[in-house]
Length: 517
Image (cartoon, rainbow, N blue to C red; front, side, top):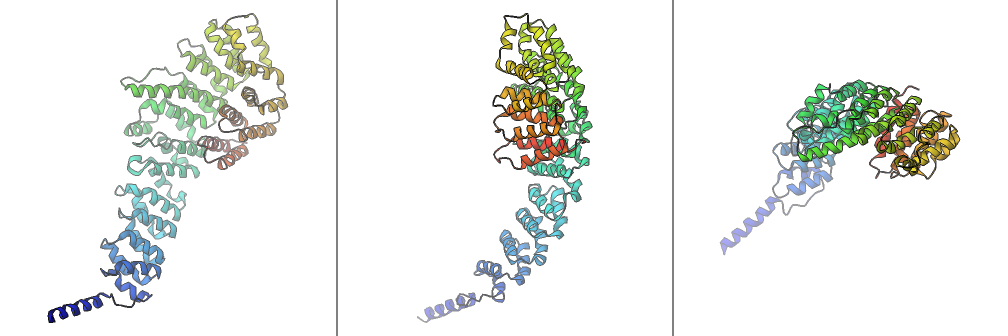
């Protein structure tokens, strides 16, 4: 019995010693000493946060270094909100795998400038690559992008599988926003990067290169001509085949984006490349190549229309006349590019070839680009060339809805800009396309025409691709820097669900901003 009493007393004394019968006090003096208590530590952590006990920070620092509840300690420090006292712990936490991301978010929120060395260590070292995105966001919270231009260039070019493609993408965006000419070669490389999940920085690179401006043109020309040795090496390291960066749709799009006449001849030379699949590739890769070539030729055709490259006419005529070129994907695309350029020389070349071609199987589909091209001054020549044909493929092609509509617009409106602007607002897609092609040639009062084109683009649903494309194409031909600003404003106010047109507007808007008034 006595033994039982002794045991009971011991138990009560243990409870007292453990604090179970302590009267809790809502003070830092009471709770800070209990942070290291096995029984009361959890509650103490909660209370020092609630009471904002700065006196707890030395103990929390030691606990952090001992590896005790590191993430909870950081959250507690955030609640205590003593930035100066917490900064040494945050600096150490940035360089710790388990806490680096959380620490970076606190550094960004508090704008802890003293943490810049640790942030840069994360961004330049190889120990914590998966924390780079958060570290970059934190660094940008305390530093202007221009101050870290070289670091951003490095991040734009680093292995996306090491750091995450989102880091490459963000760095590219920032370099574009600052118009970094120094970064242009790396931004071109980034356009062709991809991670092992297929993620890319291509669209970000498009916008960035357009913002950087005309300095990119010689670099892009060297690239499409296979003279970019740095990209060649980087592409092979990243598993990108030569044709993917030299003869795929991406590179011709990047050249077209510049709206610079210098890109005309290299685009035509690229269009003329022999359509032979790479040797020794798998069936799946060969199919990818085939789709890529179809897209490349279409993008080149449209790109020459956006640029209005008069220096491309001679080369396009050579492709059109080349019997060994692919009839549908090269010769007809070349003819359509001539139609979109639309100079008198381009129209004359199309009509001359149409008159000389004897194979009705090619003359019939050729009528579509010819009809798209001709203005009222060339319409009579086309009538002469087709007047003696009363049956067969060519007369049937003349009756096609798009061909007949193109010719009717040219004959009805001639050079009457008010008539063409009215056709631009038509519900008939073919009338809109033909009107836009003619207005792209600089007819009438330029401000009035540009305003009509912007209105037509902005009021057309995203699904009406041809109407939006040709309205935008005409605007890129005759637009001014002010029109570029307007396109970017439209992009910024676009429907968030539209994943295509806002990027197009940002690219062409930025390129127009570089155009000399």
